Length: 211
Ligand code: GDP
Ligand code: MG
Image (cartoon, rainbow, N blue to C red; front, side):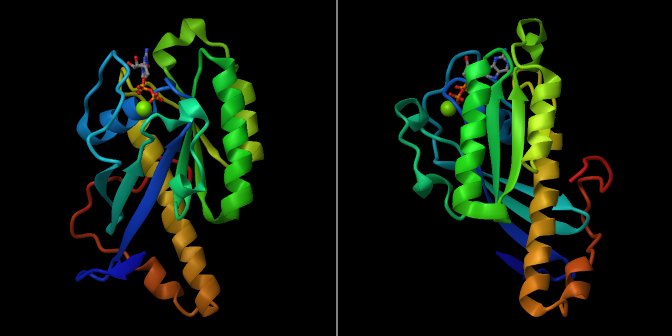
């Protein structure tokens, strides 16, 4: 999944899946992030099964394949084939819908059971523009996320809030895991190459985020 580019920095290709109940805003988050679009209507299908986004984080080139469902979640028909091989998962709930938060907890259990700690998890409380109708208390959501080693983010696809930060933090977490992986496999010999930073086209600030 990783290679070395001409400047000596590492290239990463990561698969990220979005999971969560229907209508929580998964497709809206992806479209906002990749194409900076928002639609008030439910978007039934994306043109492709995944969208690509390229980032440069501290000189490391990161290419994200962001997989969105085609609505199968409505029929409880999303199986391991959808999320297998993913490096990261974004579990989305709607802050006005308590059931959608319960669904997130089920997804966390399934992902940890099937993929263990190899997968970086983010939980997104979406539709924060509807704060007045909130039914999932912030403290509960954040406490739960911390208890399962997931980052929690407050997002609004409508207002474009919290989305860039979320994907950036998730990417940093996936880079860190890729590094751990190399270290484990080589008994630490590759530590230097993991730390090499290529500064030629820095587009994303290194600070900010807490992964
Ligand atoms: P999905 O089924 O999880 O992919 O959900 P969609 O992205 O299709 O969104 C379902 C509905 O929620 C649509 O009507 C969206 O316009 C709306 N929606 C998505 N994100 C937000 C948000 O941040 N705020 C508000 N108010 N509505 C949103
Ligand atoms: Mg959708």
